[in-house]
Length: 242
Image (cartoon, rainbow, N blue to C red; front, top):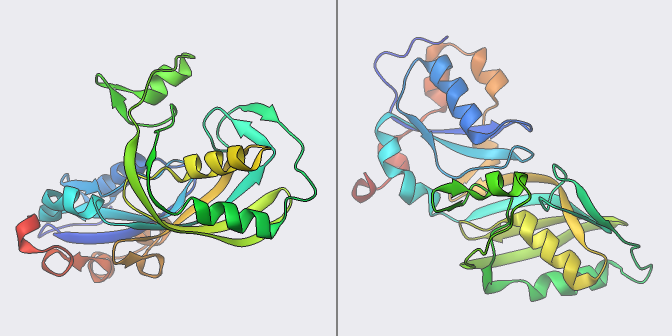
C-alpha cells in the first residue's frame, strides 16, 4: 500500500487490463492509495483494455463532465459469428460463411456509411438500467426487453486491416457508443454477422493511451512516483465542472 497524505486530487490515466471491470480497478486503487474518494469517467467492458480515466479526490465531482468527452478505440471484429453479447465473452448464436468477395473495399464502404449522427439500441448485455435493473442481469436470465435507442455520433469508423474473417479497425465516437454494437450492426449489414474480439480505448477526451500507467507499474511505485502521474485537478477540469 502507498501512503497517501495529503489526499490526492486529480486525474490518473490507467491502462485497464483485460478481464478486469472498471469497478475492479477502482477497488484496487482504493486499497493501493489508501483513499476512498476514487471514481472513473467512463466504463470499459471487462474484455476491453486501455484508457480508464480515474478520478481522485475533488476530481470525482467532475465525473459527468469527463464522461461526456469523445472516445477513440482500436479493435478487431470477427465476421461470420454472432454472439449474444456482441463480443467474444458471449455465447455463439450463429455461424455463417464469409463470402469470398467480401473484401477490404466492401468493408471500408460499409464502415463509412455508419459514420455520422445516428440512433443506437443498447445491447442487452450492458450495464444500462431498466427500472433500476441492469440489462445484463435480465439477459443472463434469457430475458429481452425493449430498449430506447439513444443518439450517438460516429466521427470515424476506419478499416486498419483485413485478413478474413478478422477486420482491425479504428473508431472515434461520442460518449455512450457501444463499439461492440457497431461491430454487430456492421456484420448484419454485410450479411454473415460479426462480433467484437478485441478492443482497446486509445483516448478519452484529451487523455491518450501514451499517458496511461498500468496497475502493475503503480503497485511498484513510491508515493512520489504515483504523484508524478497524477494530473492536477485544476489542469484537467474547468472550475465550472467542479
